[in-house]
Amino acid sequence: MDDIFKALGDASRRALLDALKEEDGQTLGHLAERLPQMTRFGVSSHLGILEAAGLLTTVKSGRRKLHYLNAVPLLELQQRWLSNYTRDAAAGLLAFGRHLEDAPMTAIHDNRPTTVYAIHIRAAAERVFEALTASGEPRPWLYGSTTESSWLPGTPYTQAADGYTLIGGEILEIDPPGHLRMTFDARWDEATTVEPAGIIDYLLEPVDDAGAVTLLTVTLFDLVGSSAAAAQRDTPEIYSSLKSWLETGQAL
Image (tube, rainbow, N blue to C red):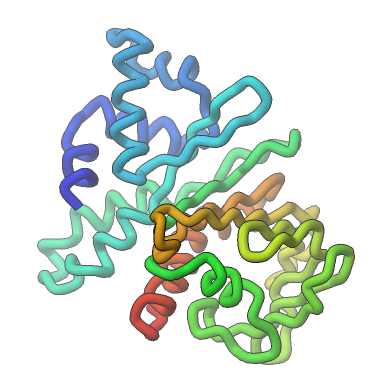
């Protein structure tokens, strides 16, 4: 938690987070334009501090390195102990969290990520992968919805709740327990049903020699409109809930 408070305590770093909130997936050069009084090296150092604190994630896109806002640490901060304070005492930080999480993403159609989140989970990659691909029974961490699929490349999957299909798509790539890639066709209301499908990609990487901790990176490509806005808003909560469920047995 010290790294998060340190990262948020600097006005230049907050300005960089604001820039990513307005338009995610920016290069160092674009972000440096927000701090013209600072050298690119200085901006790069600030971005390194934000990344070390988990507040942003970087993705390679060709020769470019793109920076994406990762609001998961702010959500974890709130859920772990800010809720123990009074509402008034917590209002400032919670408002900042909403400020980062609630803005819709800019729609981009060049197979570039539109949403990227990363979270460390104290569980082996096999267990995390099993939770992501569980079929036939409600998943507490995913709003109680049920996913049905054979989990073979080229086959369909559906995610449903209360008899309604919320998301559908096709399994594109699956390599347990490290990688899963699927199309993502949102169908939870009239607006999302007519929007084009995107892609959701899961990358699972062990981060310690014992394999007891997994870095889960969730990347969504080419979402637009209501689908993109929902992904920006809900992704931190969903995968924080997965983390809680795997680590404590209780979903958020």
